[in-house]
Amino acid sequence: MKIAVLASGGVDSSVVLKLLQREGHDVTAFYLKIWLEDELSFLGNCPWEEDLQYLREICAAGGVPLQIINLQKEYHQEVVSYALREIKAGRTPNSDLLCNSKIKFGKFYEKIGPQFDLVASGHYADKTVIDGQHFLTRSKDTFKDQTYFLAHLNQEQLKRAVFPLGPYLKSEVRDLAKQFKLPNQARKDSQGICFLGNIKYPDFVRFHLGEKPGDLINYDTGEIVGRHEGYWFYTIGQRKGIKLSGGPWFVIKKDIAANTVYISNTYHDLSKKRDHFEVEDLHWISGPPTPQNLQKLQVKVRHGEKLYDATLSLLDGRRGKVTIEGSDQGFAAGQFAVFYSGEFCLGCGTII
RNA sequence: AGGGGAUUCGCCAAGUGGUAAGGCACCGCCCUUUGGAGGCGGCAUUCGGGGGUUCGAAUCCCUCAUCCCCUG
Image (cartoon, rainbow, N blue to C red; front, side, top):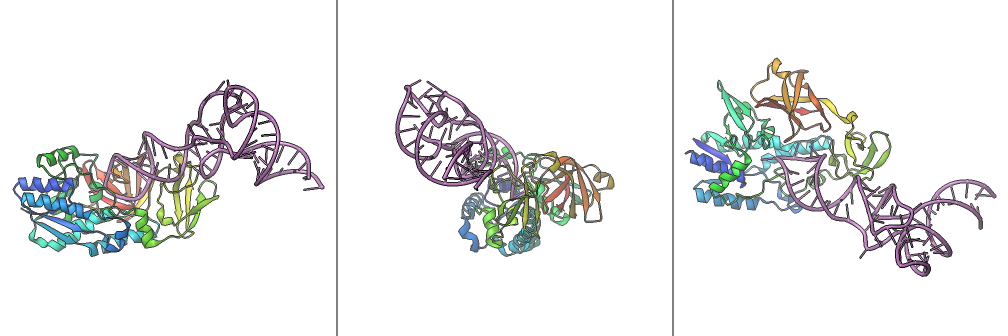
């Protein structure tokens, strides 16, 4: 098989190169340049030179062709502008889901064309094929599982995607990296929104949206207790950066029209928890779940944390109400709720 | 002008003779391919200034300064 590998210079995607090569596939490594335009370079040094250095070394040693694809323009159009639009609207976007569906498994494929059979990535995720239908399933490493970030892929994209790390634990991947004698075997995992690199999120927001001071209001008393620099620097459940004494203070609610941010120091009280929320833009990777399935789903409200048992009642084709078993305090509009049925990742919706 | 009260880390605040709690904020690290959350650690040789009493004071005394309240 002719496989295009999304390679970042990190441990995971480097191990993918090796694994596929070992299986006898014809692999080509692609480094996607999705970095922000240089206008922002003063905010932080991009580590992509280091990425490429490792990648070049690994590809050279393994006889793997390496191509660098510039998708900065596409990335800006599809992801950055979305993020800014959402932030400005007072919502909390998750750029990385769209990065996968729009860029890594979207524009990238358009760019390289059908000459490659598959696109492989170093995501901790797996696939199952049933009757020609492709399903996204959770990786063996349930802690590291990254299906959350892949929930926005569509069937076509999933069909040509392959996730070789699915059957491995992170620790096993590290071991493989050692076995393969990869120079980046001990490299620290990357984190944060991929396009930001070392740039701090608030700096990015401030650069594009500036500041817009307004009142901080105590949600419980209605009293004005301080000032904020712009509602877009806050998200629901946020604690850091409120600066007021008497806390800890947590963001409860934002009023965009009034440019006020409501905070509370009783965030952990039961009264602030909710067991339901609404979603829109429901998206199913392999077709909508059956009515019976809707009654016994699991849902993730953010990456990494626990799965809630949940039910989803559809309001219309694209909207629905999710009720979770238990309660949570951090439902932020704009974030993705990702639905699971056992090992299967079914799709996602945007929290309203 | 009298009378009373207060002054401890950026903020709040314990401590009333025995050698400066705690919370918030802030900083660092960990966790984490989103935003958050969470965990761990750091954070006043010093108690408004100056004297004094005492083996020993933030705690007692004197004095100065500032602030608040009440009565003119």
